[in-house]
Amino acid sequence: MQAYLIEFGNFMLRWLHVIAAIAWIGESIYFVMLDNGLKTPKDENCRKKGVFGEMWAVHGGGFYHNQKYATSPEKLPDDLHWSFWKAYTTWLSGFALFIILYMVNPGFYLVNPNSNWEWAANLTGWQANILALAFLLLGWVVYNEMCKRISPNMERDGLLSIGVAVMMVVVAYLSTQMFSGRAAFLLTGAVMATAMSANVFFWIIPGQRRMVKAMKAGETPNPLDGKRGKQRSVHNTYFTLPVVLLMISNHYSFAYTHEYAWVLMTLFIFAGALIRQYFVLMHAGKIQPAYPVVGVALILVAFWIAMPSQATSSNAQLEGSGPDITEVTALVNQHCVACHSQSPTQPGFSAPPAGVVYDSIEQILLQKERTQQVVQSGYMPLGNMTNMTDEERAVIQAWSE
Ligand code: HEC
Image (cartoon, rainbow, N blue to C red):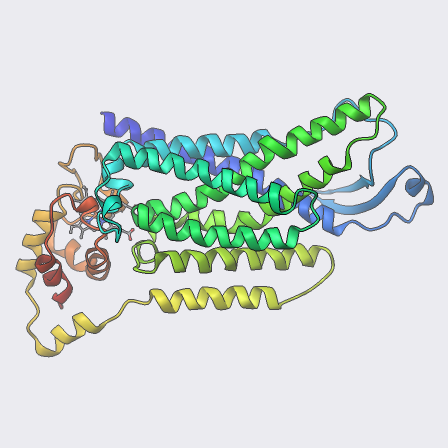
């Protein structure tokens, strides 16, 4: 019953998380598009009132006319639309999901028993939980300090972007060493997503509140508040595509169990940022296909790096000496079926994980390639709970038709 409750809660939370994220990111992309697509108003009266850009749009059967003021309008309306709950809901639901999916069972889902770092391979569940929380917190602290120190008055934002890019390579590397592959991808995405929400919570919204307060008191708002809000929201826009990719990575074990998972992650992150850059420029009327071309090239490099090598199984096939299906079935029954069955006997599992079932020989045969891949990479059995040996892994690897 408890496993079922967690599973159901997970399902509903994921729904909330995805909806909140769509609403938040959608709005954020919309406003970046609006900001970059503004044209100087033709109407002189408009310009006199302080409007420096406008956009006409048609959508959903109606016409819309947006105007942006250079500093502030003469009088601020009382019913200003604010955007922050979408960001907070996304983070809170994401964090709750992380607790249910990873922190309830850290021994399986967070610890990386194959880590090159011995201390990381031997972490207890609680240590792994604390390390994951520290990782998220430190990610924000380092990013925030970099913004404050490198470009405090938004005068060195180019240099800052390079700093943030380097930081993400380090985050990708450290996460794959310290955590299991699936968690490493998720946590790297979560470092960016946490920075995005914290940007809204600690800088963008408080800055806007100060601006509104100043205007209501008849004072001129501090322009730094506006500029800083812009700086952080520009960072957020480049984070969006990589974050979405890392958040949906959880079923693509070929990527996160790879020896060079951190390189793959880095390539995907840069590809996402470059593709985003194309759209940001496009809305400002500049078409620069070099960005997505380089982005796609990075994805192709990732494809090439992650391509499985066929050497082992084809050798066995040539010699006709691969182990037969009875041997393989025995190993699968011993090491996998406790979890991967229509009715798992492993406590904590109410349904076959990832929908992978090994109850019959047909089912085992059907999933040969996938099985070999997860066994070779060491991802399965999860947390090597059943102590599968290297010799046993070699048998699965050598198994031919
Ligand atoms: C302790 C329980 C457990 C055991 C034992 C276990 N698995 Fe898994 N397996 C999981 C969980 C949980 C997932 C889902 C993880 C995910 O979504 O990536 C999974 C996912 C998979 C997947 C899908 C991965 C993908 O690419 O989406 C395959 C294939 C798989 N396991 C094969 C195996 C094989 C083969 C064995 C035995 C050698 C095994 N598992 C043993 C829990 C287990």
